[in-house]
Image (cartoon, rainbow, N blue to C red):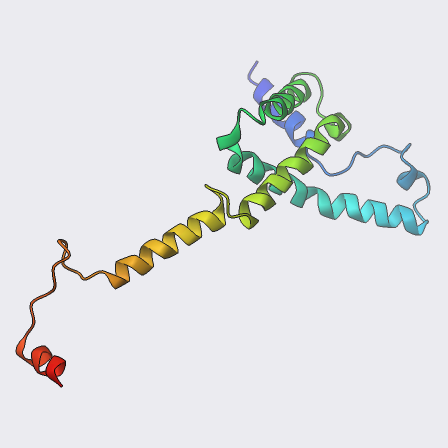
Length: 156
């Protein structure tokens, strides 16, 4: 029983490896072809950014969880099955389009100006900072007391 958490972590790790080490894949059967090299490189180098963007998209789109409930449930179900039965990157195939959608959700969050996106929050903070700079430092909004030197400067 004490080994079960370790085995589950291995299943999770195997599920998220970029490529499956199967000999029947065309890129493994014909490794000398240029197309096989290109596909192998794409699988190796683009999988991790897609996973990272999908995880970020999962966190950033959480406010719209009712709209994306199906995707969240499918991700949870697939990950649960891989943990329980056997973790392999082959079993990740049904959710890969959903991972791409969540990655697009992360990119959307960074680029759009809709409420609660990064640009909306940045613009809101910038406007707040600009108004704070324009307002006098007195909390009630009354003018600050004028010293003798400033009074002379105003007359000139």
